[in-house]
Length: 294
Length: 215
Image 1 (tube, helix red, strand yellow):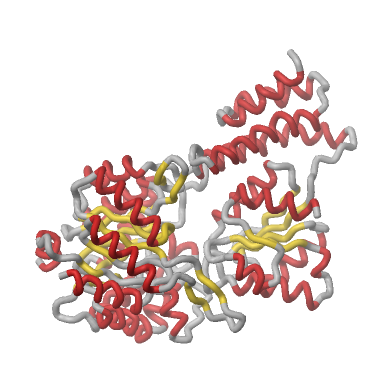
Image 2 (tube, rainbow over the protein chains, first blue to last red; image 1 turned 90 degrees about the vertical axis):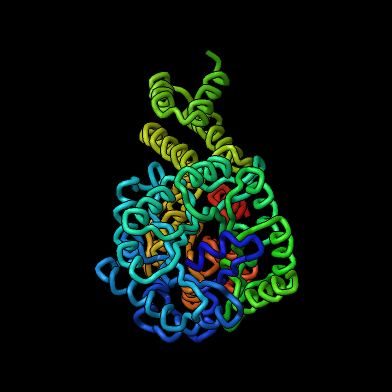
């Protein structure tokens, strides 16, 4: 299969997509609630955003299902629509997917933490993710579990995928930089996370969100010291800035972001893309960079 | 045992997240008729401030922060009835806090509320998805010093500004300090919305409230 070919090909850097929120805004939509609901209410907007990323050079885009696990939908009293939301998300991506493009099933955090922060348990996480993976399995090529800050929750999500699927998994934790190194907000060290992800036999180990492009260079350097496995990096592009007329944009210039991605490519990654604040313009900048390095 | 040694023991119990010991020491302070305000400030308060430092240094994370905060709250619950008996007022100020309408992300807000109340503030946590009107109503009723409004999404953060605009139109903006929280909040948004400040995390939020109430 295509993804596995790409992973094996040392010369290939897989270009992922960028952020969704800013793009939704740009098209004049003010969701006010869960963006995943737009899979049903504004399917064309979501398809257009996916297409914009493929047009910008993405090899693969992820479904608009970051918040579509059972527990997270329940927060919005939308859990009964879990099948409909996830199915529509596949359809919105599938119908614009080019021949040599891939659809990635996106799994985000449940929004529930284990005690003493919340009352989640590994079983609750697993059951919640399973209800989502059962639906997504029918239409996606690769999995991406992302923005997870508790390695136990990551394990639950991986288990819920493996129960229904044998497709490749990219597993991305989100880290904060502390004086003692990189940790998740729940206190898992980078070393612990990588070790567990290796044991869980995912295809690619990644990191996304929280850190901007500059800090991700340092994170990647440490990751490379800890693992031989292929790595995926999706940094944020600074913090959002709000105009007096209510428009949101991100302050980091695209050129600077792409410059940092150059460092990231030099250190060696398999997959690169963007998280919050990145747009098709950012992704096209990375695309041109990758082409120029060939 | 000297008082200082006793305070240190309390502070250690908090930092070690030893709930049993923290509660036992609170009982002892009551039964030995100690100066409870000092016990809170020099013992428990010191402990919770050290937990804040450990968070900032990357030694403590969310679970330790929450556990420390709740042990602190439970210890204060032992002491407060006796303080009130003596007519002493512990409260350093009153805070009404909520996640704004349309946004169900309550974890960050809950952590801030826990840490504020662990630091001696009287906190009214209204929960998540709360309309601006309700927040203002409660702030008036509880005579709040500070209103804290949380929003995680760029799509809901405009609700924070709405609260401030409503306070202005009612002519009561000057009665409250308004602080914002949530991942998308920045200095420029604080300026744009007319708030008094924002904090990146719960420890920063405690510092901010302290600073604002002092002014």
